[in-house]
Length: 85
Image (cartoon, rainbow, N blue to C red):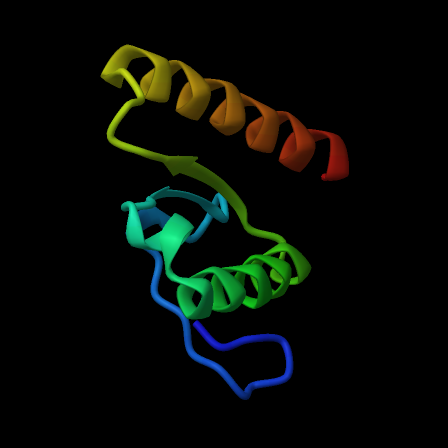
């Protein structure tokens, strides 16, 4: 997908375009490499502006916790879609 200004292209790790909900894995490089960290900030702002909800996960997250967070975000998106309609 393109950034709001069309100047940057982004790929999400996995997600649902119709819900605009994604799960993204952040490896250690996202925390320790300042160039990647700066890129992540711009990317996050662009995706927020486009209306995406993203769950960021790291290796320390338990699968059950990630699934619970994903379900909560999915339900929130579905409620918002229903309330908007």
